[in-house]
Length: 172
Ligand code: SF4
Image 1 (tube, rainbow, N blue to C red):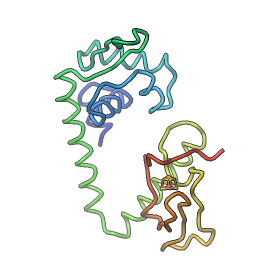
Image 2: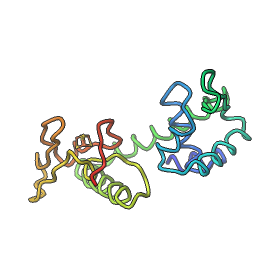
Image 3: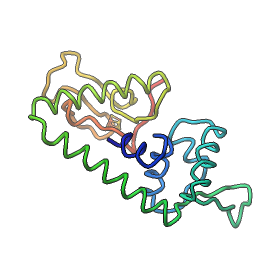
C-alpha cells in the first residue's frame, strides 16, 4: 500500500520512507542518521535527498555549531505528502485488520521471519526479534508463549515479537 501511495506520488519507496522517517521524528535529522536508519551508504542517501530536494519536499541546513553536519527537515509540501503516506499505511493496517484472526497471525509471523531473514543478509534494518541478541526462540515453536526476551525478561508469543524495537541489538 505504501509502495502504491509512493508511486502515485511519484516517489521511490526509499524516498517515501525518508519522508515518513522525518515526519515520525518531528525534528530535523542528520543525513547520517537517515543513512543508518535505512542501512544505506552516505552516497545513496545523498542521492535520495537530492531527489527529494529537487521535488521541494525536504530542505537541508548546516548545523550552527558544526557546519560539517547537515540537518534534513520536511518542507510544508513534504509534511503534507508525508501525512498522505501515513494515510496509506493506515489503509494497510485496516486491510490487515479485516482478515480473519488466524490469517492475520500467519501473515504477521511470516512477515517478521521474512524481515529477519532480509536483516540477516544485511538488506534492511527491521530491528526484529528473531535477529536480536536478547531473543531466544522456542525450539518447539509452540504458538503460545514460546519465545523469550532476556532484556525485558518476558515470554513472547509469535504475535508479540517486535519490529523496529528501540532496544534491538543485532546478534553477531
Ligand atoms: S530487545 Fe526488542 S527486539 Fe530484542 S528480543 Fe527484546 S523485544 Fe525483541
